[in-house]
Length: 313
Image (tube, rainbow, N blue to C red):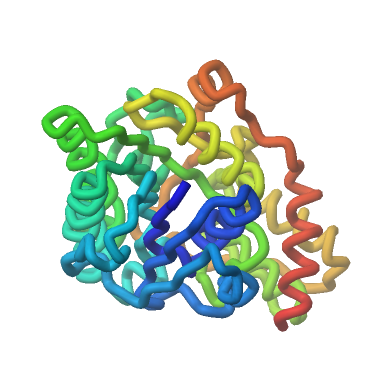
């Protein structure tokens, strides 16, 4: 197949590009490198089945970019994804979720390709139910500092479903819960890179509030497997992909200290605005329809990620 990955030089996008290349597919990576980096795709650059195009998908994607060749799938993974990023680039985040999704869908339609949207658990906002099921509509503050990301993804889902219903595009939507692994940026600002960097370098570990808010963490290879399975299933409504094993931020910080053998201390700071108190996926649909669930334990995944972070610090 020939597969287009927008945001293909990002953390998840670069792993997807590598996965498809390993399966023998041709991959076109489109990225404007606002948060992605060529470092993430350097091992693919010389592969004859790989092409990199520096382009902002918030602007029109000319079908002629692909030299009149066919395209089987467009996977739309372009977007700032960490609070630091989307608060630094709020307009770009809204544009890539709206205009970028529209342009990517239009490109898929022009090429007769399937379309896969990378949505997020953030569509649930600060949820009032736990775990979060796909039929939960969420509790989102549309004008808060996180609203630019939350609402961009909610709009992207609505637009994807509209293209599916009106234009009969073969679409998929996955709601990605906290994912971690190699190629995360060290200064990403999310809990995993923050605490790993702090523990490895001997800084105090930063925990917000009392650290009782919960998260669940899915290792990158498990997520990629789930994405591939969803691509090959005829499921048009959103599907949660994440690890349902939940722990508090304080528990997670103590695990990081133990695995890294760090002598760092834990410090507490005020909770950010609209920070979700719980975040845990219900993966019943993924289990039943995709035969998917995470295989890599948090300890296994963290050890692999720590090794990568140590090589970069």
